[in-house]
Length: 189
Image (tube, rainbow, N blue to C red; front, top):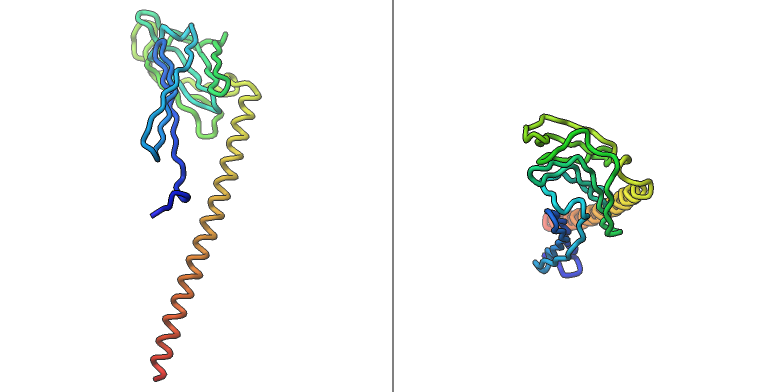
């Protein structure tokens, strides 16, 4: 059983955007509590929902969306750190709603899959766009810094685990040696 000092603080943050509502929801797993914070919503986004979205480097990108009967081609960006919105001049090739956005494992591409078009027809679409098209150089560097910090933390954690395993192995070997010595002593008598 872990002591309080050994417990790793588990906090999770979720973002919710739908029409004119923007919320940051923090969950503290240790205390089983939620905190809610209101977030601004871009005026262009307020009438919409059913958009695809993806989170990368403290930025959430939004693609398309719907406000029946209007379906959007727009792309929006929300900076969590700066608490600012941006509407892009570049737009999607066709209006989309109910589509899904997926970030590539290396954070370099966004894949936009499926959805419905402006005529409410299902689309079997697969778009691939570079993250660098939507994020500034500064925002891209932030992601690289985060990745390096995560790798450093992982390496430190691996080293700590290896040290603990070595220590446990030494203790185990020491216990085995004691048992063997006791048996040898008993065998002599």
